Figure 1 (spheres, each protein chain N blue to C red):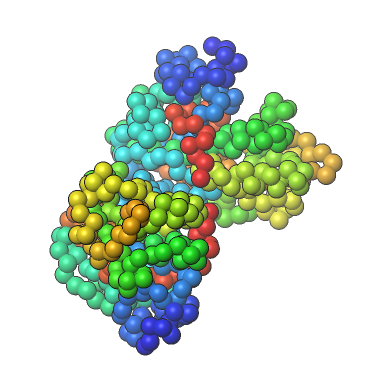
Figure 2: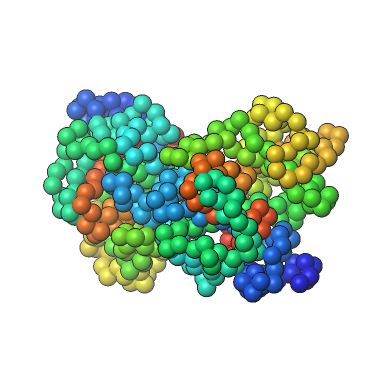
Length: 264
Length: 264
């Protein structure tokens, strides 16, 4: 299956290909204009605390849909879809340890699983690109650089830990425009949480991201930082849950929602 | 204690008076400019389903803060406050039946209680008044009329039922302005959910509200309907929980937040 051809596919097409085992790659640049989502699955007895964590940290964990225990069909954002098969690839953790990276969850699924779909930066990145703002990691064809910070999330039960942020270099005038545009997308991480001095949020060296790839900071550009959807996964992994499933980073769930549907 | 004198009090003052047993009346018109909140308290084993219900029905149930199990201090919206004593009056339900209307919860409190604070229409009403829009029930000195509708809330576990709405009569041009203003307050019920024909949402007679008082509809005015904070209480009561505590209607929790803090 050709990546370019899937640029203008819809969410249903991407999910059908995943379900049939015909797409197991990253989803960046696929089905442009359709909202993509982070997936976190926890057992029912931890679902309240994880939902509370999301409610308390809406910039890092913007909730698109939370499914009933045992349900794999996101009736709001993608009716008819099946979260057990419709993502390209998953990460399965037992006691905080990665034990499998399957392309479906048929053998892993349990009736006490609660699935959370969280907004993703692709939504606001599309809006920034449409406004003519630069996205260095896309120009460079690499992953966005992500960093662990010293900003503490509001804890909830076993879920606690620092916020992970993504960084995009911009001129001050571009950063201002980006704040304006992103304020329209609270369900896709919303406005940046910081710009300028990385050390004031505990980042020592921009050239050494904790996840993703480093990107160039050019003359007069400042680093602009957004709360990142890796945060809930990092926090859930840190909590060493007996059982946890997420999408494989970059291998998102593509919904039926258009980006504009997330605008506030 | 004089009502007029408390108009310009702050949230802390109102809560201190409630705690000392010196105020047990309604809070409408008190501490103007401070966010007031609906209170719902459920046992821990129902907290996930109730939180899920709120997440799925954000217009009726806009979450301001959800407390840790057993905690009575809303650290985000009113640090130092105590939800067991700082409201004027409470309603205590056992098996869906009202069993007490105490002025504090000292004898009822349990360590497995989870408290939910939800946004309230006072916030957007203040914004509408400041914009010069009419609020008939305030002019008439009565309660806003509220109606059960045929709009089904998105259910979550035992929590299911119809949306309750409040109604304010307006000219079309005023209704348009109200939509614009209320869109800034998603945490205070946000934009209206309907205007015009009451029957299309299952309301047979505007003169017979299910809660509150009827108000006059004048020439050229249309009824404008907002999702109402009574919804979660109605749904929780309908679920016949073994145990449920709410504020007494109109007797809200006054936070430290300014109305502007809820603006998106």
